[in-house]
Amino acid sequence: MSDPQPAHFPQRIFSGIQPSGGLTLGNYLGAIKRFVAAQEAGVETIYCLVDLHAITVWQDPAKLRHATRELAAGYLAAGIDPARSILFNQSQVPAHAELAWIFNCVARMGWLRRMTQFKDKAGKNAEEASVGLFAYPNLMAADILVYHATHVPVGEDQKQHLELARDIAIKFNHDYGVDFFPVVEPVIEGAATRGMSLRDGTKKMSKSDPSDQSRINLTDDADAIAAKIRKARTDPEPLPESVAGLDGRAEARNLVNIYAALADIAPDDVIAQYGGQGFGAFKPALAELAVEKLSPLNAEMRRLMQDPAEIDRLLGTGAVRAREIAQPILERTLEIMGMIRSV
Ligand code: AMP
Ligand code: TRP
Image (cartoon, rainbow, N blue to C red; front, side, top):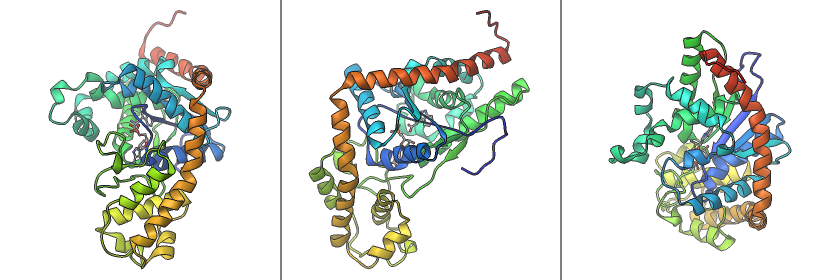
């Protein structure tokens, strides 16, 4: 987070997660844990449950409602403090969708066609994909820029989308001859910016993977966590004596990275401790650590989920604070573009 921004853009952190299913260990280590660290560092932090992004693919309404509350419970259980961070769901702040429309008119078709996530998600059936799925990165740029956020902590998979957000800010500023939108900095840091599937070390750990064995869910109990780690795919070799020895060993590297991220140490430190040992020793140690770190979180999520009205109330309060920042920035954007603002 050392890149200097022009003085008129004070450091402000924004990030979002889709309520499109349960939270995984990948989300936790690659995103939420780092959101909490930013909050603890005393920076202004705004965290969003991006429900408008979730509906770019079909969501059953009852499931969306549940997943949104569960995601909020995940943020809170992990340590997001609604008094210090702004926590809210996207659809309660209309400025996101309004600025996204404007960015639909700034971004170029060619830019969006290059997005690998669209290609992955739409697959061979691009003609059947929603227009929203294609325009998804413009809404993401709007999420960030409607707060003039300067830094965005995300996992590795979001890098290309953030480059697009930068391109949109630069083109808007250039086209209108202003220095209005900050050129955001992606913050992709830590040992687990790309947590991989437990069944295939070349695939991202994802809530949409059909195999539940491929991921650890934040709602998994201690037995499920331990069983999934025990069955995680590995190779027959012991852990190497140095991190370089993990090259070509995707599954081993993944487990080392997960250990490092959970323990807040570097992969080198994990290797210093476990190098030369087999998975018969390392997996139980990892399982114990994962259960120790995730069980309290899991219990707190369950407790919070018993009072959905309180979660809704917190999201409502967050949305009021978010609107106070976003609305004036949207108004100013429209003014810059020549729209009459008479009220
Ligand atoms: P999503 O669940 O796709 O909305 O992702 C929310 C956040 O979690 C984003 O910052 C992602 O980059 C991050 N994330 C998702 N999956 C992983 C993973 N397997 N490893 C690291 N970060 C991840
Ligand atoms: N596209 C992100 C993901 O799937 C979620 C997201 C939406 C986001 N808007 C954002 C992340 C703004 C960071 C900033 O992971």
